[in-house]
Length: 162
Image (cartoon, rainbow, N blue to C red; front, side, top):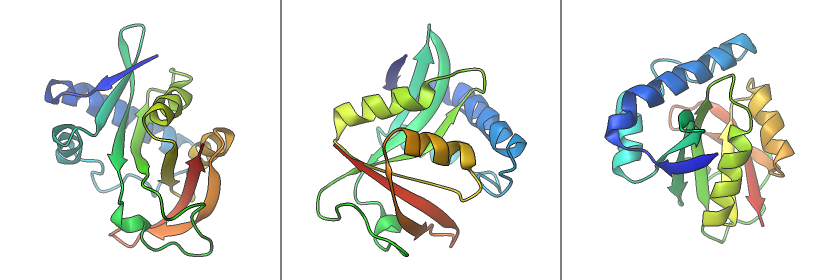
């Protein structure tokens, strides 16, 4: 799989990928994540305009999307019921991962690429997103504790340092 920076002209396809990801979430019982229009087209355009939006392609076809954002992440300042593996080094955060259900290996491709950019990664997910929790753990991330989004919603937080 290949990864490239997303462009504004990719927006419709990205939104299709994210809608497919929402379908995977709902089918697996995760009804509380990515609700209320999140992530919106404006959020994705902001990712792209800031140089943080990326596409994953497989054989020339778009397979997934993610945001790769340098620290600091404001919602990661406080962590509860645990601690970050390291809270002194700069890191990158992986947000808004989505892929088509028939595409396999997208998450691992994202992690492999991100680790080439930064050896200190953080990620979070919803308590009901068991699929994401599984792939995060399988990729070698360590569960660190609970963070709260600006909305007040709880997320399980992970970190991987290589």
